[in-house]
Amino acid sequence: MQQRGHGVEQVGGAEPAAADLVDAGAGMEMMSGEMDATNRTAIFEQAKKEKDAIDAQIKQMLGDDNFKQYEDYQKSMPDRMSIGMFKDQQASGSAALI
Image (cartoon, rainbow, N blue to C red; front, side):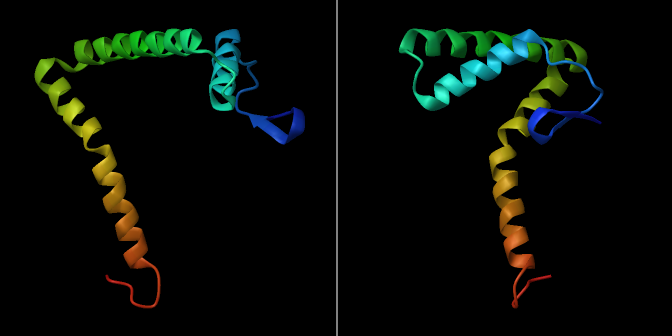
């Protein structure tokens, strides 16, 4: 790991890509509320295009049947996270369920 300014460590020592810095800047603008609706829409459209391109690559790699299974698994993530948090809560404390 390489030490970067302000205590930030970076694995591999590679400089961040310019696109990553632009994306981070756009994210900060969105969080601060400084971005107007046009810019916000453009960023969401770009993100959707990138997600669709990634999904197309995954579908090509997995095939139609396995891609459907992958999509179902991705859609169940909130449920699996909720169950995991519930399980963690029940495992801690004085009346832990085993």
